[in-house]
Length: 266
Image (cartoon, rainbow, N blue to C red; front, top):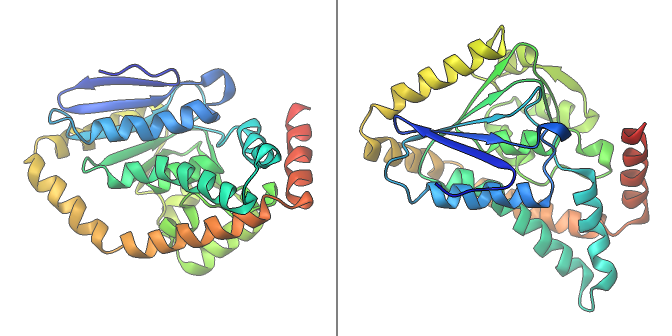
């Protein structure tokens, strides 16, 4: 079992429990954690004894999304860039996208078990998962318009297959906060549970049911399902990378991001 700084991995009965492990920061994904997720899934894809992954967060929250300092560092990375700044930022965005696309590309299905907060980049993260469960006390937000950018890590591309178009647009335009109960009603979440304990019990019960089936058949099923969406999602991710590679250079986006950081410190 590989060791990661910000991820905890435990394996039992062919079910891998992958936990985001930065609980003192509400599991905000800094640069190291972000790319560890991709590394973990590329490793998982080559393990014959892992049949299902349950993804959850340690502590009181699932994840508060991307660490604001990580995003500011990405924006500031053009300052020392000697080449085309737009091309540099596009490459940074594509690299970040690939960390979460590794979940989709992995032949092993993932069940996201969400408790507490799940906003911004955390919604991108669970949008890459196969099945999403949540506690009734969970809440969500496609937060990126508050950051001054469109979501560019998969939410807008992948949740089109779960949420009605008008609902997704409403949530993405407004950065509105919505509950796990609402997310289930709209189709983003499969089921909700009264407590975190019941959520995790249900997640592992479902994982164990899948793990008992022929692994090759489950993998083949995931590959078949992905054929329906891969091209559409890939085109969408490429297009939003083009947009944000320009937008992230704007003074307005930097100002909005810094203002949000100031508010978070209060």
